[in-house]
Image 1 (cartoon, rainbow, N blue to C red):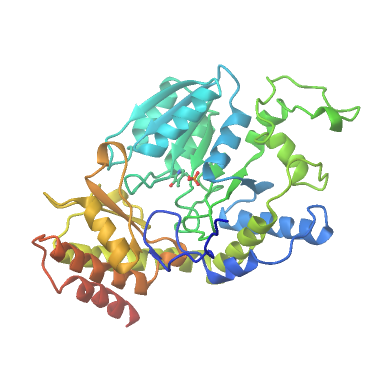
Image 2: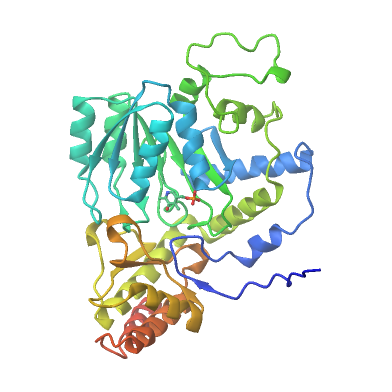
Length: 411
Ligand SMILES: *Cc1c(COP(=O)(O)O)cnc(C)c1O
């Protein structure tokens, strides 16, 4: 009989834009015994998770809960529940994940229009606002932090304009939540999707979302009740087209995440433990302190890379603190460098997609992976690897530059 070896993943230093290293406390939380999903002990944990999510999203929204599935399940749940066939959706695209918003919106039957910005830049908010004034769409869908380019779109003015024009603003904050401020209420964002395996440092498998009453109202008009669960009052007052998906029907999920506790799916028990523990860690550190930590290690990393003689990709004015994109030097095989980092040093960095494939490396400093040891190890290992590839860099400076940043900040 064929036998399979014991599972023993190699220890890795993960410096990608997700998935990233997970706090051991979260891993431990995932190993606790299962509770039934309607056990009051478990529903209390669900409620606490919702409460902590509101804090992390800076919102008073009633609705803040996770969708079971990876981050794109959150995006799909929001768009599927909101978009009725014929609704218009505007998607300003400045990287790969903008295209994902287009794809999902089209599948939902929306009439999608796009604006496109060169990868490595973001939009001047005025450009988007001018477009929505000219042709107000039903929904504006936008990425906050584009992990594919390392750029972050300012949202505040856009949120204000959307509210004035009665446009619903849906934001993919998958990569930014927990690493920089995502001020849902202050910026007037109507629905926001976060991610677990990025700055929250929880394994992939859940997508925290939040949305306000404007969104809940549109969804309520489309509510469909599963046959075996119908009560007499259900099924009336529906004016919208029913939501096509059962799994991603936010109106059904609301009944599951509220005291009604109507059965929907079986909550992903161990993932909920993980999310709750991950959020507890975020709140213990403090949101502001956590954002400062992401900026501190970004400063050290950037100082090291530039002293080494490497150039960064993208407009520095809109750089995401948790993703740093590096131009692969001329005539260097970027994949060979990545392979050597992984196999000789146990460090993983990311390549890129589409127009940037083979042109940049992407280095993540997210959540639990965002620490001094990782930054110093990466700089030392990258220097050695590039020397090994005969790249003419300035040896000996990178780690020193990062240490300078750390020492200055300790003073
Ligand atoms: C990672 C990421 C996603 C997709 O997340 P999955 O968990 O892989 O589904 C979507 N949007 C952005 C901006 C991301 O960085």
